[in-house]
Image (cartoon, rainbow, N blue to C red; front, side, top):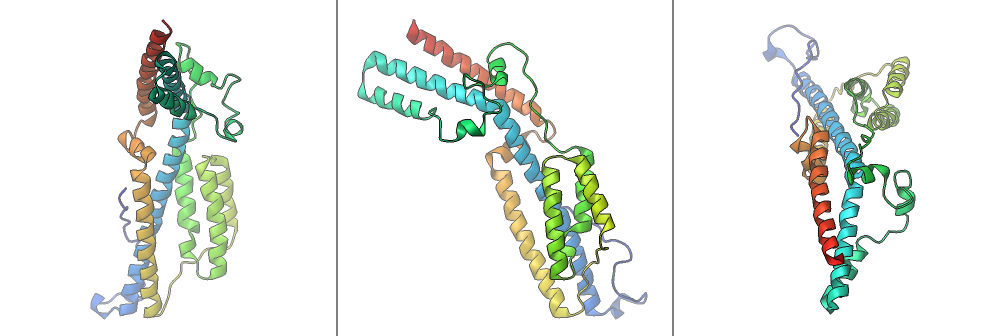
Length: 280
């Protein structure tokens, strides 16, 4: 994920003069650099948060659509290992059968966590459909729409905590942005519109404009540290299993899920044929 470059807005030089740039006070040039760094950091935070939401939602879709098929493969592996152990009686085969079975044993609380999509036989209707030729109900889409993305970006630009002038204002913005992030993660367009109206009706935000050189330098140092932390978060997201999968097909992640589902279905068929061979 690369940092986006934000052009400097007109009329924000902070010089207070229209003469020779060489006459500009050092504090004014430093102030302009701080403002440019603040805008760039906000854009970078938006990009990182957007990617985090995409990874989180793709992970949810991946688990919803493919999780039952992975479970079916684990169950088949356990049945095959048990069938082989029963035939040979070999201690090593018996150990492998126990290990394979332990992978599919329910963990405490799992049934409660997934009771909404597990059927009475331990497999969802969607999973059963994927293992047969019945049509599969498309998984629920939770990826933010373009309008949701637009609303989110506008709210973050307006209410970002880094634009606070004092600690009380930062706390107010922190609380508000937390609600904005939650609504964005759920793709709730109407709630974002309501939050936009709420912010517009509140106190007009004022951009911080330090006057002392020491404060400006401290601000630049803080922005640099914040950028380093965000870069680490972005790297972790990109290097994660789901992040790597998402980057393989950024424009059509659903197609990638379909391809993986086809591969898993082929593996299920192979395992079932192998298990049938033991039964025969």
